Length: 363
Image (cartoon, rainbow, N blue to C red):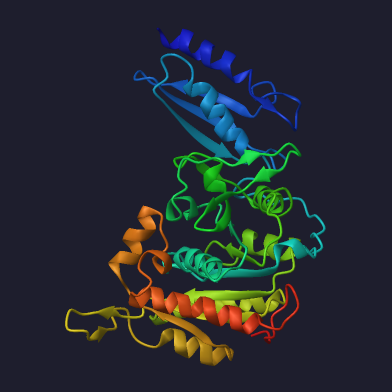
């Protein structure tokens, strides 16, 4: 089959994918703006996703193209509409008013000043640790650009279903209900999205997902202090934040900025988790590979508890790749004990408080 005929067949397949915002197919709606085909059958789709478009639209279009005879793989380049991309100034809109969503229970946001410090590891093990203690737990992946939770919870390739009431049913793993953009788009999709789309996704995850009644709602935030953090606190009352850092001063400095972000948006800081605190040598000696005491110094400066010092352990990474939290797979390991102790401290700090409130003071 020549390339011209293959492109025609792809265009015909895409007419069966409807964009609900426009009420027409994704080609007529201008959602798919370009189709290129390589000689080996690889298809490149240029995709423009508006703030009101469902994220699942990318996956639906990809599936339709993959079903075309002669197509071997599909790569999707997702961009924001003109006027919402890099270097542009979005229109000023009134910020949403945070809503009380009592069915979510106590909302805890896990953040970090920089990437690579183990924030998602802490989020996953906090959620799994709370669930293991008998709580009803939801875990929302707000890291739109680097959604790792599907892999870390063994959910790669699984897609959320839609209920009869047109609500998204979250996936479940290890007793935790999970929602991630990584379950709606392909892992090789480039998400070049600005504030309005990120806000829309987070709003949908909070309001359009059938979470049911929860006791705890853990949010895994992306690194830094950007659109996702602001969108979260503008759309739901966040009871408290947890900052994850590593011991070295450069990481602690970035973490401090993350803590100040929580302070500026009136979210109490629950405490600090120091990850990769030390490596246990074969003789049992603790070697501080990345320095010593940074998390403790940050906690003292902010006047909050140091919730855990989690050792650097290859098994934590291996189990994360395999989709099983270390607190469940190897509960007697040093890393699991530290992370389980963190979950117990979080639970204890909330004991006796009303739903969605924690008896702590802003940093």
